[in-house]
Image 1 (cartoon, rainbow, N blue to C red):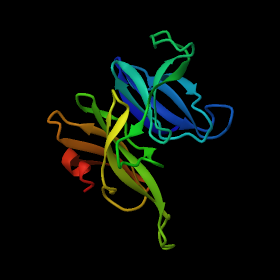
Image 2: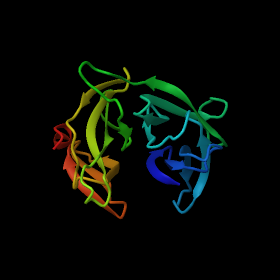
Image 3: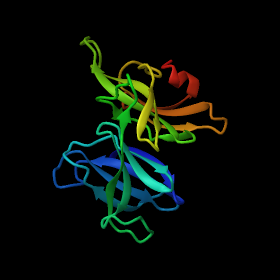
Length: 217
């Protein structure tokens, strides 16, 4: 399992993950599950068919007491349900999804080719925010890798399924393989902790603010 994203839902720590062994394609597909109460093992996990693979960077979050999955690449928000498309219960053995919202864009905004980085967090009212990324390739062959990630802060009106804001592109610490996979907004609704993997070798916590994320700085 790789590319984990986590969120709390009904007193359990849930996750999404990518695996080449989740489904029959032997390509990157998504599994959903949760840990036991001591977070020492996976208590339940289920393959989620989300269309033609490869599928990656699907981010879980809670909206209106529902466990949801955010796929910015396909511009879809799913609700996680049982295999019969009924609401989740403690006895649910296999998970499935149904489309909750289709995402559209406000005037003069562009979210084409973006991929998920962090799960959406509630800001105020109907407004949620998250980080998404695009990928580019360096021209220089001197780099360890030519791949680089560029980030955007976006805001979404969940009731409308409408992206209302997209920041300028930025990176947090270094240009290159810097992957932001999680964040936490503190109680002041200002400071934001970003959880970042650097060069696929080390992990850091980086503290910034909402105002800096919004301005792409």
